[in-house]
Image (tube, rainbow, N blue to C red; front, side, top):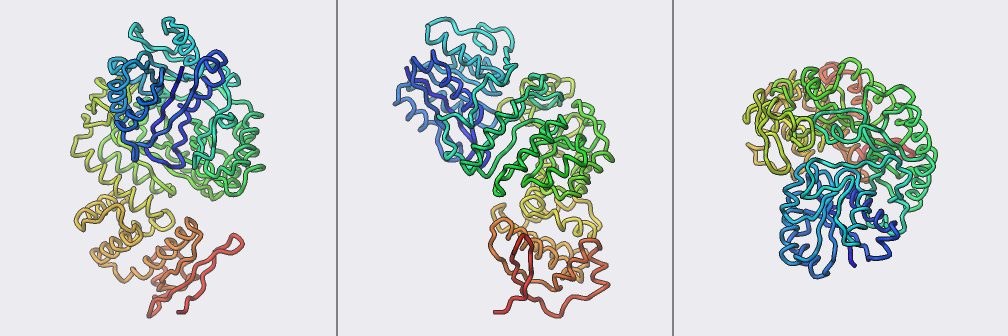
Length: 545
């Protein structure tokens, strides 16, 4: 017998480690009954490079007996096409599926040709299902959904120590992946209405710290440098958070970079200082700054408390980003703009903005009629309009998102953006909207040089607002930080063109652009400076041809 497990990622990147499908693959390999009766393989496709029909044709030629698909929101369309083409070419193969989409639309997947579905965390129930399939028995049980099922049937292993380690398993070659997704915990105690976790297991289960240390040792040995910790809320338990961070700080190679998802409200001085000692970045789900909107999705929010906690990260020089969602129940165009302004005021390194997806199986989806939300019936189930946000409002919000994505996040603007909006006396959301319009009018592509586009728009805006006399101050400060960003990303030495000496520009770290202009006028001509690093410090040296 030949059993194949299939994953499809959006693209090859540091986040394309197919943790879910690999967990099933390893679980089947570890089952003696199954591994003794079948040859088990794993295939990994990329949506941006692999055509689903061609992938189906290639897989059909292998004449596998049992095929398992790992289906998520992002790959549902690709998997639909693959499944249809594959079953046309190989109708005798039994196909099953796992992943969040088996909860979203189980009957659609069964109608498309899946014999059974795995719902929830599937390691143990997939073993049970495949054992029964091998024996020719009816496939049923906890976490297994079939045409005879009357309700969702999710399963969640209570004791994670019974699950084999994906990272340590000999069947997994980490050389195949530019980054790794790493689990310390499963389950989430919160019940945010837009999230799958709100309908999953609220029981938080943890992996043993000895296992985590063994996995860390192996990641170091394999020289894995990019690690995304998959815990829904990494810092939910203070003592465990401290213990893990101390372990990572003590052992990690300096080249290793970690990404964590955390709750800002749970931060304290101790954990913030430890994050500051580790090469890492944090992602924080703000979602909205409107307390009424957040109440509808079971989240509480105290703006002053949130700002104080963010201040702890800034004190310890921790890189962090914020998430926002467009169109939550009760959200308006104005409240979303306010959320953008609040988020920018926290000075995150990036702001990730998403249009609300009504994921089947979440509380927001169940209450879609109560909230009067119209949405796409197929993946990605995005909001079309609501009683508080029209289609026109959503389009406007998406323009702000696009402007923020390009100018602020892609443009690494965190260190200097506040000078722009303060000098122009303009809200960030308004600035991003105008920037999006500027890109459209000038027919500028997202792929064009971001730093050049920033300079173009800033020059345009300062001339429009009759503040062009401040351009040497602003553009020099921006140029200096663009050079720093370039050096940090590439470790290549750039040349920056400045109207002020770098020492003078340091004045802007604590004062306004107008104050620097009043204190000292720009030099009569710009000068080039070589920016380089030495012993962890940055230096500027006058550049002479």
